[in-house]
Length: 139
Image (tube, rainbow, N blue to C red; front, side, top):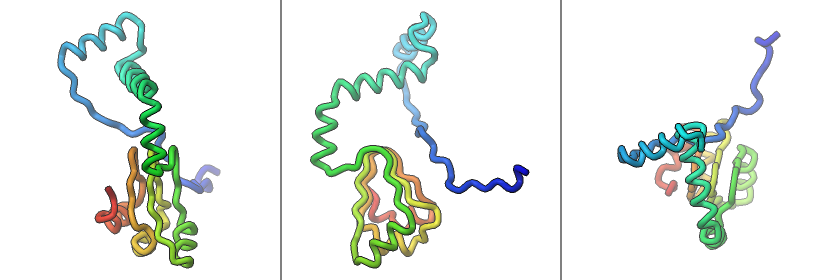
């Protein structure tokens, strides 16, 4: 029965992996905080520190988001969205703070014909062919 199951929409990763370099003393402090039970692991410490800094600067982030006309959160562009834009002669300017996705069934030619610029602070998920077609428009 499970051989008959089809995934209608691929799962979107909820996180993006990043790598940081820390000095040995800073890393030791993190490990001490974990060892003392303040945090469950290094990742928990780092996520908490990042969230605290984002909260501390939330007014600046809100002002910058508004000034730069950024969509906040998840923005998904379907093939239909791009076909509608093409029919109306509209060029899309993708400005996202969070995650922007372009559907996997979007051909590179359609993306190139309808997307004028891509600014994503966070992550952009699209097929390698679409990313290559938009390479000169992604900032």
